[in-house]
Image 1: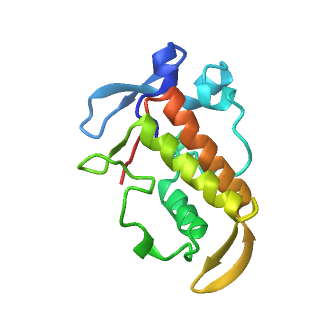
Image 2 (image 1 turned 120 degrees about the vertical axis):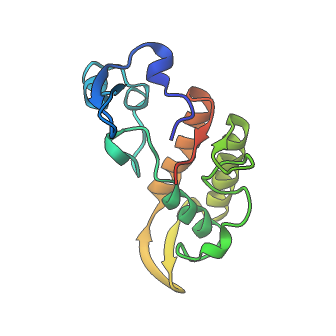
Length: 162
């Protein structure tokens, strides 16, 4: 998810008041209304196909676990082989708590993913449990690369929520 929401930075977010779990009111971004008012920098950027976003009613939250599966696939591993998630080459943070990935780390990961995709001839076919699924996930990989560059440029990097 974005480290800083660009709609808040730009002053285009439409806010709504909701009741918190403890009964106290608080404000949050109303993504539907913000998009309708053309104030959402994410949707205004016209993201490419392959989106794995929209968690919890947002448009700009990316599903990092799926991004990690794409990284594994780009590395020649099964998408469900979690042994490949041991370094900073993933959608978690690079800080001590694994919660924040700064812009330069987002760009570096995008570059790494783009290079790996190029080495595969620009096409990524998924495999799971040691078998090719014949699922073409090229658009999803290209979107992940785009998203990393977008959060680097527009959001001061990204946060992980897990």
